[in-house]
Length: 87
Image 1: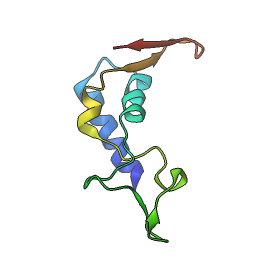
Image 2: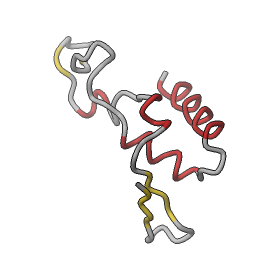
Image 3: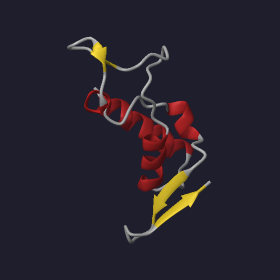
Image 4: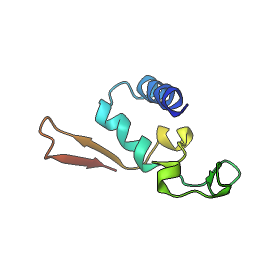
């Protein structure tokens, strides 16, 4: 069920920052994720009921409030070899 949530967050980011490119929207979604859940506990592997590992939690728990003002924004020029960081 992550895809509908992430797509909705991307739509909210685009609505808030209409001048951002798709790379600029992707950047805060990746750099502001957290490996802790809403209760500040570790993300768990629900099948084995143990602490999750990177394959269990993937990129992490999305944090929409942090994504609206990420502090650091990485975007790409037309050439994928050039990266621009905007603080």
